[in-house]
Image (cartoon, rainbow, N blue to C red; front, side):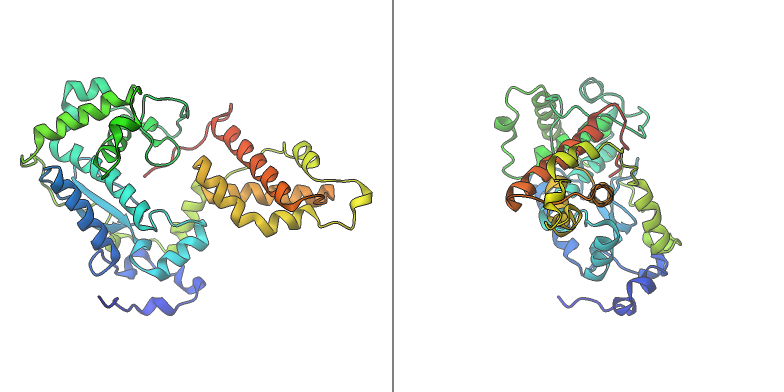
Length: 342
């Protein structure tokens, strides 16, 4: 299918960031997102669920309360927009088929909850908690907890009862997820079994809520891409703790004998993208946040005049472990982290 051409495709990043979101005029139609949605609908049909969540383009991923639909972020509609997202955020959330499908299954869980008003059921509330619970600005997950499924990053099921249900639904819906074996012995299995029973009960039934409303559609969003990214970056802003010096000095050398060796700052700079991706993958932390930490570490290495001595491979492994440990401490240590909305 030939891709639609847009005047903004050839603009520089600086020019593109001055455009209003509403002027992008992109849609789900004629993009790869249509195939993703078709795959989602097939999965729902295969389970006998009649709901087909409608989808529209907005500024981010979400499924609004009382609306059985899914908002998809604008940047996924076009390679040029994915490129600017990658530049501004260092990551493209949902930018691959598997990641997009994972998020769509999660959002479909919200849509099914809204369409069938599942949160009104007593058993639903007993297992997941009250849907009316206030969404927190912060949550502190327990990575070792087996009371929740693990689907999206940062143990997202632990942030709110609605997210717990959406994550459980996504695990249940995913083809070949083998959830009975994967979660055998976990308290979370009760939730999965309940979702299984619940979906069997509503199979073939018309949803009570069928509104096709679109909340915050792209054509109504007047802010510029620059303003959008400024807010998005501020959301992940991070002031690194000044506790790296001792660890960096143990890993690298300040001995004058090694002054001809490669500066530690250059070593980190050269490997930063690889390290950042790896640590983000295993901790769930946002790459933009990790990049701020790496900036700070590079600065400290310069000030301390540290040098990279010994096996580069071992240094790379040790530094990745150090950053992972610092990230996990920031996520689950005494300080609270921001709640990440999806």
